[in-house]
Length: 513
Image (cartoon, rainbow, N blue to C red; front, side):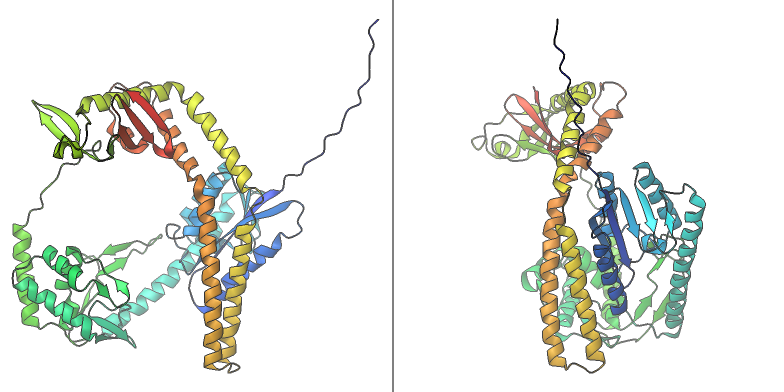
C-alpha cells in the first residue's frame, strides 16, 4: 500500500507594494516671493511621504518661472507625463488645479490621459481626487475659473502695455545689438554701434548679406562674453531694423486672446504704434532709406534655388569608409554611390547600388517585421520595461537633490530679507550669496546628470513608435512607403552584399541584396 505524507501549507510572506507618488510644483514668475513658494512646495512634498507605509515619493517635478496657460514650455510637466506613460508613477499630487494647469482643455486632456493609464491626481486646495470621482464637471468648472483668472490677468497686462504704447512711454524689454538698456532707455554701445555702421556701409558698397556675415564671423565673432554666430538672417534683420535711426515700431507681434496664447507676427491684424526719435540714432535716415530700397530691388531679383532632397540619401552610410552617398543617374536608372569612391575610386572599393534595390530591401525588411513583430518587438519591449522598472524602483537620489535645492533657495530668500531689513551689510551679503549660488549650481548639475541617466529609457518611447507604425500596416506592403521609411529608419549602413537598417530605438536588422 502506498504511503501518504502530509505536507503543511507554507504561508507566503505578504509583500506590500507602495503607491508610487509624484509631486508637481509650479510658480508662474521668478520674483523672490514666488521662488520662496516654489522652495516651500518642494520642501513640503519632500517631507510629506516620510514614514508612510502605503505611499512613496518617486520624484518631484518642479517648473520655475513659467506661465501655466499652456503645457508646451513646461519641461518638468512634460517629463512628468513621459514618466507616467513609462509606468513609473501611480498617483500625482498638486497643490491646486491652477498650479497644474490654467487651460481647461489641457487640464481635461491630461486628466483623461492619466485616467486611461490608471493614474490618479489629487488637487489639495480644491480637495479633488480623480481616483474617487469620475465626474469631469467639477474639474471643468474649476479649470474654467483658473483659465478665466489667467485670461483676465493677461488682458489687464496687455491693456496697460497698450496705453503705454499710445503715449509713447513704452520701454522695450531688450536692447538690439548696438545698444544697451539703462533704466529702460536705449543707450548706444560705442563698440557694437561701430559694427552696425560697418554692416550698413558694406551693404551699400555691394557686399551681400552672406558675405557680410562671413566677414563678421572672421572679425567680430564675439559680443562681450557671448559668442555670436553671424548669418545672413541676422544681417538682414539689422539692416531693416528701424531702431537704428532712433525710431521704434511697437506691436510688431501680438498674442492671441484665446488660451493657450500664441505669439503671431502682426501683419495688420492689430494696431501698431510708430514712435519717432525715441532714442539716439546710430544710422542716418538717408543711409537707412537707401539700404531699404536696395534690399527691395534685391528681393525681386533673388530667386532661391530649389534643391531636391532625397530621403534615402540623407541616411545612407558606406560600410567600408563611413562616407555619405551621392545620387547618380545612368540611362534613366538612379544609383547611389559612396561620396569618397565617387571622388576617387582608389579611396574606397564600395560599389554602386541601385535605388530600387534599396527600396526593395526596405519593403522586404518591413514585411518581415509586420509578420513577426509579436515575436521580435513585443518581447523586447517587455524586457526593457522590466529592466527599467527595476532600475527606477527605490531611486531616492533625485528626491534628495530636489530637497537640497529647495533648502538652498530658502536660505537665499532669508538672506535677501536680512539685507533688506538692514541686518546684513552688502559685502557679507554678496559673499554669502556667492557661496549659495555655487552650492545651487553644483546641485543643479547633479540633477541634470541624474535626470540624464534616468532618461536613458527614451528607447522605450522610440520602440513604442516603431511597434505602433508596424501595427498600423493591415497587410504586407508591396510599394515603397516614404512616410513609413522616414519614421522608423535612422540609418542604413551599406555592406558588400547586404544593407543594415538601423531603426529607431537602435534595433538593427540586416537585409541581403
